[in-house]
Length: 119
Image 1: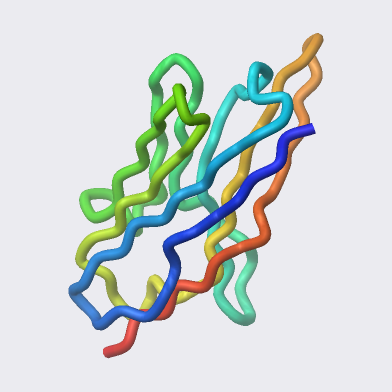
Image 2 (image 1 turned 90 degrees about the vertical axis):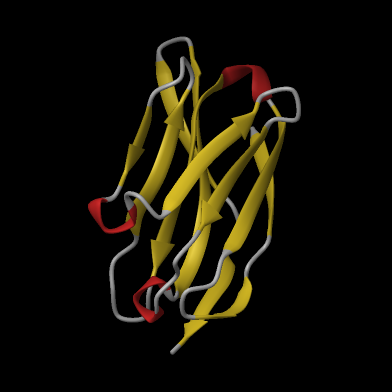
């Protein structure tokens, strides 16, 4: 089991920045990937960014060049630096951790943190 605690959401004006954090605990030795998803009202949950153990990262096209995902492996924490925010980025942001044990992948979700961008 992996447990996560998210922080860093809030209200910001368009053009502003926020930094989300997600600290993992539990079976952290098994972590394969850490990332962020978001879900706006009426929309499906979508990938924002993911960091895979080994160093590769992936971003949604809509956030490329504005958002940066990073990890502190010593703290088992993943960050999402969000710059040049727009109202379209308003959503609940969820931390996601994928563990890999014995060839089996399991996904864990944080409780979500609200990000609201005002115009």
